[in-house]
View 1 (cartoon, rainbow, N blue to C red):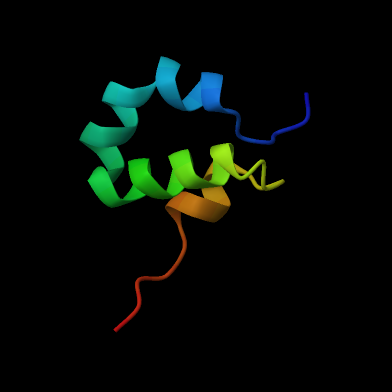
View 2 (cartoon, rainbow, N blue to C red):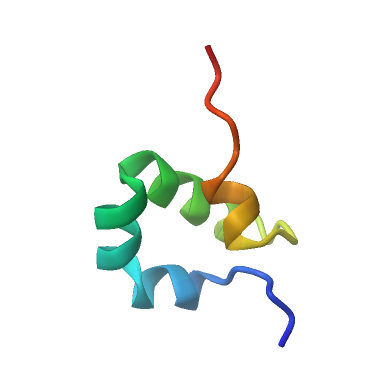
Length: 51
């Protein structure tokens, strides 16, 4: 288990991510997956919001 987010993970759990974390989190997850950035879901989901 690597813990790295993949596009397959995002698409498979799209409804849960959208419902629990919102559309902005979905967009950030998709961008991270498409850029093949080595990051975990929690790093994206718990990123502080910019003021």
